[in-house]
Length: 127
Image (cartoon, rainbow, N blue to C red; front, side, top):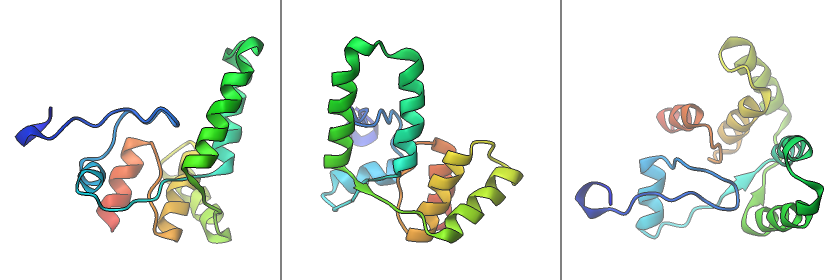
């Protein structure tokens, strides 16, 4: 349990998020409707990791996970300005272009969907 009896945030099994920002979690607990988003490029990035560490006998489980993400979340399409902003973020401060694209897309579309704790904090501060 968190402070004042609030339950602790739990990992989301579909996307592996372990830390949920307090403000977002409280919105969920209060019943406010939130939509979760993902970028297709994030699935591609995950598949590169799958190629390296997941045995081929477990590919059916990977397929189930991909289907769960597509069923549970909305795909977000980064507008052109998000791609450019992501380059600027990459050059200035965050050396992971995919993370930077998540942040720039979230900012451009007014949504929140990054699992990078520092980027989540930055988005929430700017809103």
